Length: 402
Length: 234
Image (tube, rainbow over all chains, first blue to last red; front, side, top):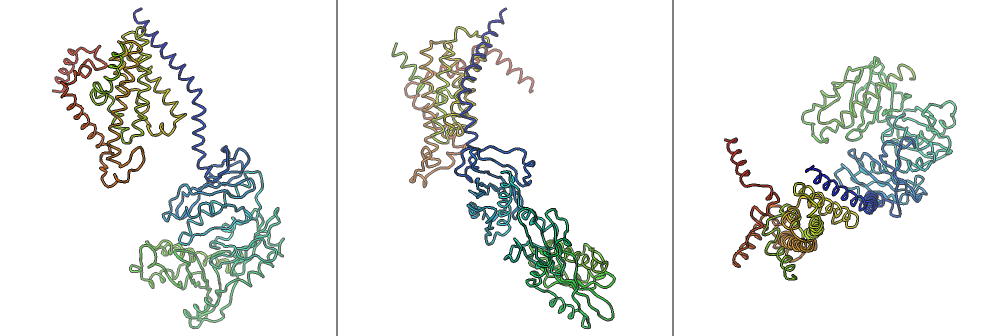
């Protein structure tokens, strides 16, 4: 009995306290909640200054938004959307917020996180304001190309996501543009050039490996690829080859390409005559591939057949690689206009005997690992890519069209 | 009668200043006195809790059984602290952010539990309220004094406003943690020196009697425990 009173008193005090505190919580709870939301919305407001409230969209995948969109917010009064995009500049992990109003115009962009060290992101913040998918123009900062490109991609992704999030459908031409690197892996960093004829957009590979032509009427779109070695193919929105059905597109693209394509055959022929003094019957050949080979020839020397390939692949810098392959498919000669071993970070030129390195390829009939120079990975990878593409080109010529 | 109330009030401010004489509430004192604004906010928050808890504990002093009084006090103090916390978070979020975890730690601030134990449970509601107010003012005063010295001479600013002429002479260590101890020690020394001249403070509350556990503690068991430990350690 002695213990009952203390227990009762303590319990009563606890209950009274709980009641009072819950009453206070009923008053302060909503205010605190509103403040929390306001803090979370601060970043959103920065890219959409006239936003009033934001509601986060769940299930982004069902809207068809790309994976690089980590969060999407809808402005509650219908003023548009804010997207949080993760992009890759020089390094991955670049987080950019993009606000887009109801008309699809950018209201603000801001880089929240970056691993790039130049610190140029603030210079790009908000420079895209007012642009929409139709008049999107990349803002490239000199000296920070990779960062600018990462930023550009993020903004572009956000603009496309806006169309999807607001229930629209993307112009298939945009999807097709993303397919260029997949269908033509040798077309390094395609850049838009002046359009002509019936094409909506023309892109030129920066290594001169060919052109990509996009035609679209808003519903159906086609991608026509023309390589520097004469290959031509037309693809539909799903990436299926439809060349035969759309020969008109192929013809038009070919005509444009032949008028604008920079020829490397002369350069390759000159190189061959330097290497093989008796080279004769140097004839340009067509390869049906869209890789880094910009010129292919066949020639005769000392009574034997040879094939010469000029590949431009991007390593530390653009590499101009000559690969001569004999009739049996083995490398007879490999050279490049310049090896950039000395310019790469580790300056490995002292340890590399260039003659030995080049001779190391002779006799190979498949891609080997001898291309790899430790400390010059970028250049090595480019050379490896070039040899691989030369072998592919050789096989496609010898074994007929693939 | 009025005189009595006044003396209760004044006692807390100087003669029995909780921070500088009773050496209670040391943790928040050292932690939040880096700048004047947070020191004042902390002082005010603690004072509000102190007055309220003193009043409630004094009012319930005949209801609360001796055996469970400390849990009861803690629940009551915790309730007021939580209430202050919620109200600050809702209406003065910047101060809530600034005080951080030390706000919640008011629950275990010795000044508050100490006054409940030493004063409120033995005195009337009104006297307890005056005691709480006096102790609270003493706490604020001590905190303000420390924060003033640390911020002005350590950081060269006052309430966050930079004082141009102090920038040349500031002593950064004062604003850092060691400076807190340094200033605290010097202030206690000065306080001791000042009160010594007046014939010294009767440190009644500073002795064993001031300890919250005094009533359940017999010095004998303490000694025995100590001796036991000594034996065990040996």
